[in-house]
Image 1 (cartoon, rainbow, N blue to C red):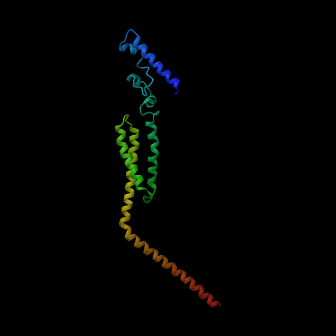
Image 2 (tube, rainbow, N blue to C red; image 1 turned 180 degrees about the vertical axis):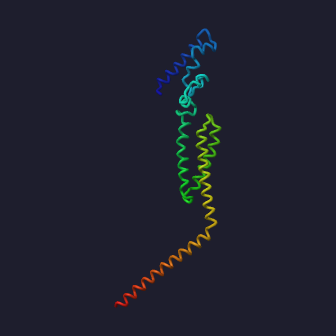
Image 3 (cartoon, helix red, strand yellow; image 1 turned 90 degrees about the horizontal axis):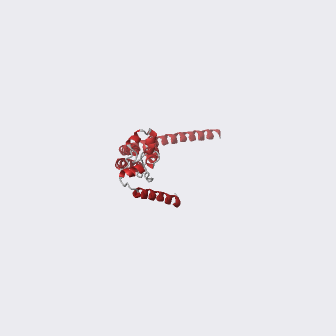
Length: 194
């Protein structure tokens, strides 16, 4: 906004204010007749609109004029945050050993803290509370998967390691035996032909 247009707004406000007080009838009804209180340009919401006017608004108009409506950041921030929830849900298909405990713990804590905060702040933003609740749920599921995976590793570490090592040793010995028999047969065939 340029300085000339802001000075015009200030000038209009001052002129309306002076005209209202210079008239002979200084009662509040005079202000209402002149439209003084309705002419304020600095209101961000329709706080001056009557309940009757709000009832006749369409659903789109109520959504548009709401303090958490489409034209505010209070609507678009939760819409964009759903991408985090969808990404977390897509990570359900990943193996637990490839998940980050710190990242998912942060998502869980963020979801829990901001869900509570969204119900306290003004304007109360239930759309943001919903997305944070689901973000916390995704974090809880992923952290649970990580802990269950790590617990299963602790219980089977010694038996799995020895079983896997024994199977690997047997496979190597069998392969070495086959290679040795193949080399021995080739040496015998070379010795017989010479």
